Amino acid sequence: MRIGHRVVATFVGLTVVLAGCSSADGLDAGADGPDLIALESPTLSDLPTPDASIDVTEPPDVMANSAPPVAPDAPPEMPVVPSKPETDRSEPGAEQPTQDPNELPVEVVTEPGCVRNGETVAATITTAPEVGLVMVGAYSDNDPHGALHFAQTDSAGRYVWLIVVPPTAPPGEANLGVMASSNDGKRTGFGHGRFEVATAEGCADGS
Image (tube, rainbow, N blue to C red):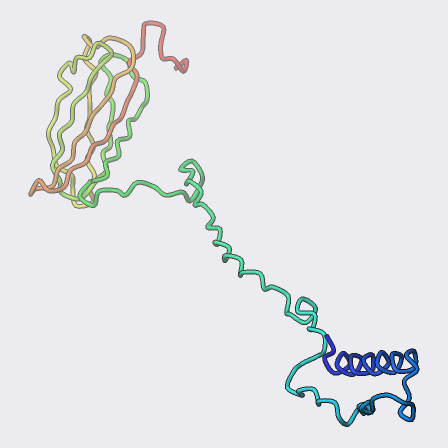
């Protein structure tokens, strides 16, 4: 609302109304009758000055001048941790079970691989130097038929057990078991070997 303009319009309108009434009634300052008080028209200088502290302008467009709303920060993305693949123990270089440091390696090699009753089999045993050995055999009927022996390896860790196959040993596969043990008993190991006792027709390999 423009206060200054409205005040001026009010006073101007009032002046016009008073002037119209005077002319319509035939009033004249020189005619007979009571003297009328002459009304002076107010000038702009007589009007009150509008208060300059009042803001008569239209209110600004608040939405046009306001800053756009700020969106809240998005939560940080969690890093994706790749899962660890399972180790395939069948692949080369895969993790292997840790060997007991107190275990003695024992290798048993028999020669020849097939014999007839009455013939001799040489079982070569290789392990740690100067350790005790316990050797036992089992033929196809699970009987040792005297194949039981005690010995000790030499300074190179070798021993050769000569086994004479008795006439009572049945044909078929014979198995040997060897246990090695250190003198203090803190280290032990096991090994296995095998050979074949020929049938009347001979060995399985045709010999």
